[in-house]
Length: 112
Image (cartoon, rainbow, N blue to C red; front, side, top):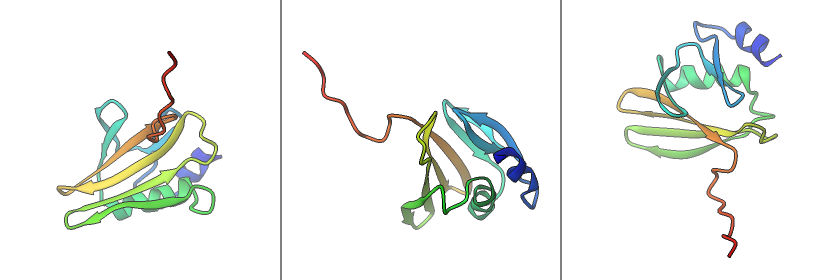
């Protein structure tokens, strides 16, 4: 169903590969582990994700908004496979980081 929604999305941004279960636009190019660069603007990326992951179900939160940098965290409410996506624009590039489950900064105490 998610893939079908992505395929019906307007423009040239169709669903590409899936990483940890998170759908990436077909323009995504891997730059590092779980990190991808996409063609287009931040607005294009957000339009794509509005169709693939509706804001009513997948909440968004601004994590940076300063000169030259915009960043939004898209949360995965079911937490299976991926915790969320960090979508950010800096230096005229849009990148996506797929946040794996358990990387939200919550550290478990070490057992002795």
